[in-house]
Length: 71
Image 1 (cartoon, rainbow, N blue to C red):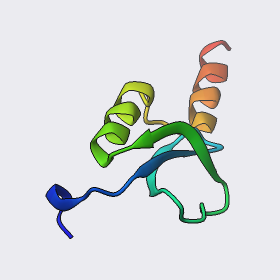
Image 2: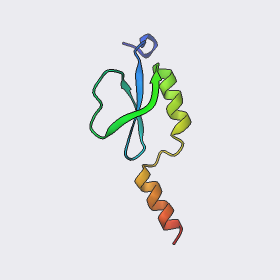
Image 3: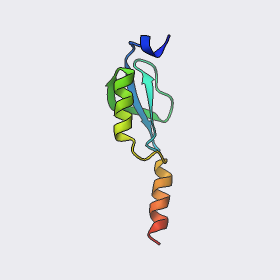
Image 4: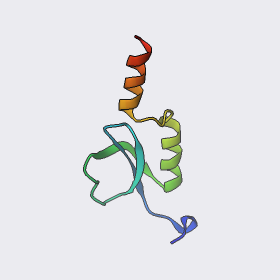
């Protein structure tokens, strides 16, 4: 199946490190991942991820950097 033929529904998922991914709707999520509140076409979900995932660093690294910069 090519991306152009993809009419499947996806869900945006995130993990505890606030990293995002796409998952096919109806499939069991892997451990550590949960729905992030957006469902739709692949393109719609990718657009949502681009909008909300503005800092690609894992949450733990962002928090460490913030603590280090205040010392």
